[in-house]
Amino acid sequence: MDTRTGLPVVGMVGGGQLARMTHQAAIALGQSLRVLSVSPGDSAALVAADVRIGTHTDLAALREFAKGCDAVTFDHEHVPTGHIATLAAEGVKIYPGAETIVFAQDKQRMRERLSELGAPVPLWRPVSTAADIADFAAEVAAAKTARPSRHAARPDRDAPRDSTAGWPVVAKAVRGGYDGRGVWRLPDLAAAEELVATGTPLIVEERVPLQRELAALVARSPFGQVAAYPVVETVQRDGICVEVLAPAPDLSEARALEAQQLAIDLANALGVVGLLAVELFETADRLVVNELAMRPHNSGHWTIEGARTSQFEQHLRAVLDYPMGETSLAAPAVVMANVLGGPAGGMPIDERLHHLFAADPGVRVHLYGKQVRPGRKIGHVTVLGDDMASVRARAARAARRLQEGE
Image (cartoon, rainbow, N blue to C red):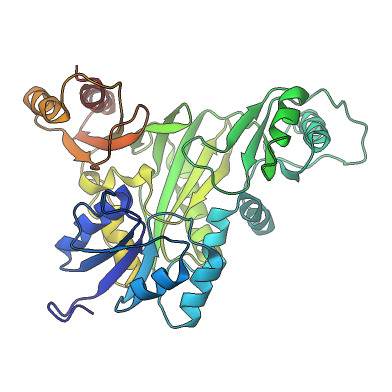
């Protein structure tokens, strides 16, 4: 508790842009967000008043950081589960817990648990050799032949297989991948052999015939209250999310409710406290779970202006066991576009802001205080309006102005 205000102190491990935007939400609630940052130059460390320098892998630093915090949470999933369990055993309220966050850290554990729960997932398998991957590709080919219905089913493992069929498959690093890293599309056995030779622990999945990607974002408190946001469409380019459209255009009410209920069920089954983002593939006839994130998420940045309660405030409410906030849209159409670092040189970012605001004063800009590198997320813009097509065009134009200085 902050003795100056009588209000709780939340500690967030990680000093990136998620902590920076959570700090902004904490201000409105009168709270003090404490940040554990690797460097004083990190996004959140540049703006938060209570910054401790340390690493998320150092148990002593985590212990010291947690002293005086009413709750501790994360802006990334990379804190060792053993450290989280130790802090919880010592009385720290830390969310999500070790038994939960492991499913966001370890893709094999995630797929195993989702399969146990009967959640819709792609065909998948842990692999250690190129022969394993070739065998899996043949399994995928057999499944496609034997899957005329909408429900995926594993084929008979004893049936004869063509080891050259079923490519491409998708390989994923069991741990550590994000923003397109740690994911490989393998077109053939030669590519599989090259990847296996790196020694990276892997799972492989079938390449889902997706029509688009969706995200269902929910928050859950220790009491068990759950709040669901409108389902959004996420647009990826080179493995990086470039746009989020809220609500997902032309998504039927039945499919939207299915996605929200799936996210709620997973939050309850996995014991999530805080935000849970369920990244989904939408195919012609079903939803498939792609990834899970247990923290504020890029697919929810639109909520700062576009929802009645932002995902960052909602995350704080959840970890403090406050009642959940209203999640409805603030406008019929909301689009968030990520701002990526462009080529070196050109117009300074401040001058780009001047030009953008003169051209479209309704655009909301969030810059993260990061050093610019090509392809790096350095901020995002959000536009609200009545027509999705025009709102989307404005958001894309604004992001391009900040990235390229046009």
